[in-house]
Image (cartoon, rainbow, N blue to C red; front, side, top):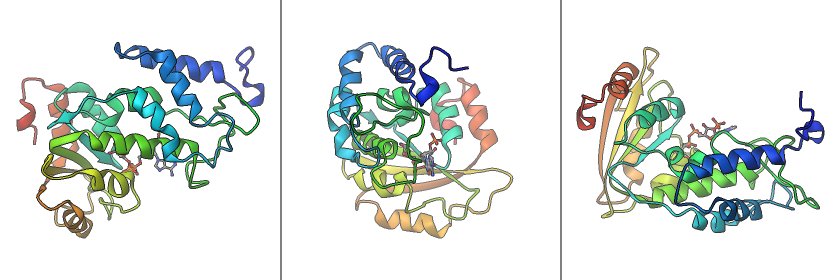
Length: 244
Ligand code: DVN
């Protein structure tokens, strides 16, 4: 295993570049070699704990975004259910359905001082340091995605935890702050309640969410079961607006 793949020293730079380019090429309007070059410039030859969100600005610019009026779907602690819905129905779009999210979803990468390579193992863990190469990327990409939101925005939160609106999440600390009235009209919380639900739309953290929303942005919350979401994902006859 790993023979010929350059894995001996934790290097799979061929591997991640191939994955990156393959994913990128699905988006026809991108010059993927330029996009890869801009991406690499953020972290190459740097200590992997010193990559700031700003370092990704040139990459973000190279991958321009369409705005997502009335279709933006944010999520927090609901990664799997949010994507299972957005991948089947085109009425809601997550960051991971756009190039910035799709190209890097589930990948790990970092650089090293004195090297021009991309490493995919031996990188510091997500919470190991503030300016973590991968975490800084998701913060920056999430900010860019939230900036494109307009009209009605949806967010799937989890009813299986005590604090569905977690102040430490990217949703709370980055995305919500960038939703501005009047461009964004309303935030609709879809609180995903499974059999093990511990809370509902009266949850205290959701009160905090309403309090931090920009004045003028409307708010709604609905408790929706996983079954309802799955039914709607798999039945295109159900109008999206009637899903919940
Ligand atoms: O709205 C979404 C989307 O736009 C996104 O980029 O930001 C929002 C989701 O971020 P969030 O609000 O912080 O939600 P989560 O569920 O707390 O974390 C999101 C993701 O960050 C996780 O799914 C993790 O990705 P992974 O490991 O499944 O590829 C990652 N993450 C968070 N904490 C982590 C972590 N990865 C590793 N270790 C951790 N401690």
